[in-house]
Length: 147
Length: 222
Image (cartoon, rainbow over all chains, first blue to last red; front, side, top):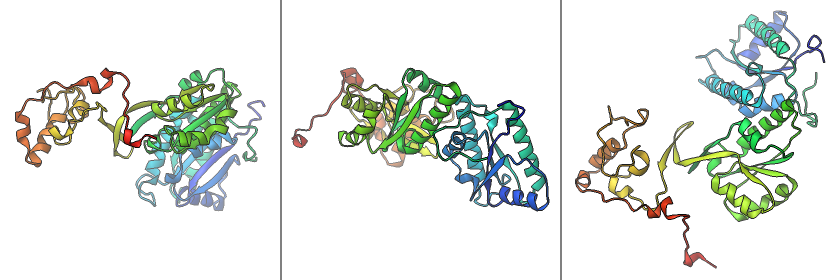
């Protein structure tokens, strides 16, 4: 696959109370953003574990985003701060594995911030496109992410 | 509890070099509690090894299993079938667990995926500290329940050393001075007079100096 034709698959774990609403609003407002993302709604980014990120890569993701509430406004008080630490820890683990840290990113997006959501996705897709395919997908895994 | 920490992925890949079918074997006891080698960590390390295998073209097949206790034959036997199918076992148990598995499966290479660190407690979420050196002759009753052998950086039985500053250890300023803690504790329980007697040199033959230690309980033998 040439880099030119490479369309990255990005998994976006979006908090129900903010980033998911922002994604919804982006759609309502007809803001354009790349169709490379697969959104997974989570009750809070604090629910996300290191394993979730690694499994996403194993199942074919080229990049992963954890999108939580803005710091200080988590619906569950500090779930997004927990997520931030877990994302940082996983980024270090990715470096150990041999994947670029930039393939995993924590972002904070308010429920009304549709534009920030669209821009974040655009930036992430471009970053991962430059990095190329993650090549971490387990071919024998039947639960791979469909395009 | 026994506290351990995982080795880095490059270290693990180096240890596992040349093997294809790998079993990552977790332990459901101490290392689960200290978040180093339980079911969740087995899953994380296995995923990491699989991804590393693909990015580096190593073609590893990584299986996962966690048993209740790696240092107990009853539980070790439950892993027999899975261990037989693998080329190598990467044990996420403590040092005792790794050796127990290796002794039970004599023809199978068994390697440690963790560095076993110390006997300690969970101080706060994500922070573990050493509390016991397993010296084999406990002197906690003398020191108000605070172990100078473990918690004093100089292992002084007749402290303090005089180097502490603002109740902090001079060797490890991030840690409290054990002798300050001992003084406060003895004062609180009205036993300060214990400090007036000189503690005799400790008999270290009960510790690692006496070779491999074992306990034989005739009343429990069959």
